[in-house]
Image (cartoon, rainbow, N blue to C red):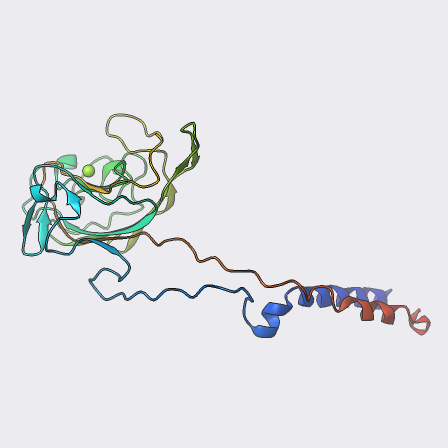
Length: 270
Ligand code: MG
């Protein structure tokens, strides 16, 4: 009986090794991957494969960009919201902003702006340094859907970063959402939302809901009456995982038969 169990165990081990032979022999996955593209990423610069929306010179990438003030490599919100001429779907967004160093107003009236992904999903920009407001409306919130995990806001006037990874939703022909949108947000390098499932568009006046929209749309930067400053804005569209080709399965089962013969020898039956 012990012998039978031993041989059975050997069979299990052998077949397991055979199934994973490609990985074990080569110490590699065996999957044939496309070569990852080379992207240069220097400090304080947009990655080489990014669409640069603002590098300090002009806001030509934006509709209404001429309505904002540009000086010393910085764009200041003024007059109206601006939106990109180019449309984007799933993407990675980098924005640097500074709320006014001269503190005026309170709550939502202090350093308010916003990054409107696809023109309808707002990641809030606000002066949330020692400035109380409703939590799902403070800086780095998904507006009126989810507060940030923590408050990493810097003092008024100091430069801050928002890094956003957004997965666009999908809709069927009838307009129903078939795949919801997701967003991951880092504020000043600190995680605020980890693959948060959006409930729909963000609105000030009504509950969030999905409304069918194109696969790509404009990115908006909000003017909310406060002179919030921006610099170094870029976006990357290449955020899909590489797809590899699985290894061939030709080596499975090859070791099983010789072991079965050993078990059947009469002298070993006790
Ligand atoms: Mg706002």
